[in-house]
Image (cartoon, rainbow, N blue to C red; front, side, top):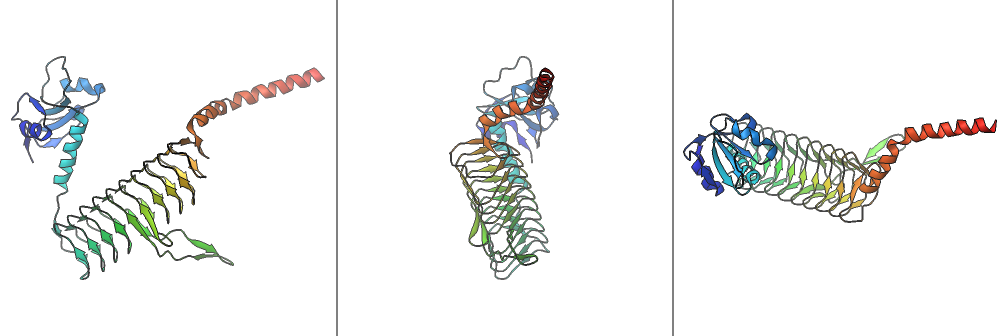
Length: 343
């Protein structure tokens, strides 16, 4: 689709400088811009590119003052990055505006499908499932029996939702996410481990995004719960009966063991390991590759290390740790010197 600089300016409530009728049909980075593309300048470090870019239209901040002539049309807005993000959101809406039921998909006679839903080829929707208005079920998605999918939620190819789980509205689950597989429950027996049936479910509230390859296990009893606004990266394991509070964000390759409760507005870095049956207070920040093995009771705490402790203490400790080889050498030298004096 093509849009003129004038149309984009009106959409963003910005001021157009240059050819208001120039058309764009794609988006680009400012350093890679070509004719017919739209870009933006938000980071001052990229300012030089605005004088050489091939982009036809560039969104800039209202305070941008060019030092020489620019080869493109400018659209001035209060916040260039936020304006461009808004355009990306609209672009995604256009690209992903799919509706209808494709041949080769299966929808149970007892399932309920709302208006304007998209179901791709080879998708499966089980008995008693409920698919909300405007939801998008891409090819090769499995929606089990009695699953509920909220309005305007998107399940990308390969997502698997086991039976009895609930996904809220305006959620996005990326490819190969698995929701509701059995929790890791085994009881020691005489000569092996006996599986403990996992009969709970997973509840995901509204406005949650889950990255590709992430798995969230069903509860042994009750529910594994992901509260509204949570953002989960790729390749994360969330075990049975975990509860994650509102607006918490978790980076890739983190693992959270069973029955742990994480508060709201937490930030968890990549490759963090969290043991089971503990609680983490609201607003906690955990640095990448840390290991958390005990309750975090102080709200807003910042932790690092394995086992994790207060980041200020960790940094002071690390300074000493780096000096251990030098200290060891000095100690050996002192021991040798003492031995020589005693002889």
